Image (tube, rainbow, N blue to C red; front, side, top):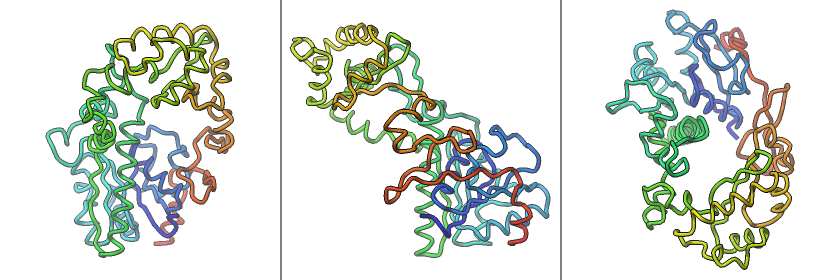
Length: 357
């Protein structure tokens, strides 16, 4: 879908490389400027995040290599960098310099705190950004410390995906106007924006700030339960017809307390009853009981387990090219499963790219 679009990625960590990988999955020519040597890289050489990319190894403090980087950027539709504010300017690759070489360039800046504000110059990580934006607040049982799946809400959801949207929007605009733009993709911004649906529910009074009393974090029908074998199942049968199916499968349709789905005074008691019910059997039992139903119950699977689950396997969502477990590209176009490309190795295409220039 993105054939003909070139993205230059300045090597970084987390959301920047993920955004570049997503664009490569969609067909863009993504060229990563890797540091010469191993410089500070957290992921392994040839990692999943480098799949489908080309790599050139440069030392951006070397004048000749810096000139090569500028030439590459001049050929691109967009650039991705994830340094603290001001670092690219000090390297001699800030937006003014790059736009002088390439006026239509979309300059994508990926940070946690953004390019401005009191914390813009300070360090932080995924958990800090979503804690500050409000996105972490509901992520636990009442009274327990908030916790979310590592990197998913902040780095990927609020960061990388918003950067990709910004880059593609900027590219579309540049094709109309001939003018590039600077995309300020901050995780604190994106993770707050992701709260919009929840805020719409909050406005109705059904999602108060007090944890454990809202429509999605309080009821017995919206949580996970432990099973006899140490596994877990997820339950979220919000609509009345799905809740009725849930009760029917459990033989609780005639129970007067369970009939009162939205009676908050019963939520704690009914949660305890369901905890005992689910603890009586292994996860496989509940998976079989609810299979094919509209009860909105699903087992909690690890990525390795998910790869072999019937639905996930049928859609080829998790794959193991080269023996490495990784997800297939998403989304899909015309029903086709995207191809998982091999990852590049650091500096693998250096001579090839120099020759192209």
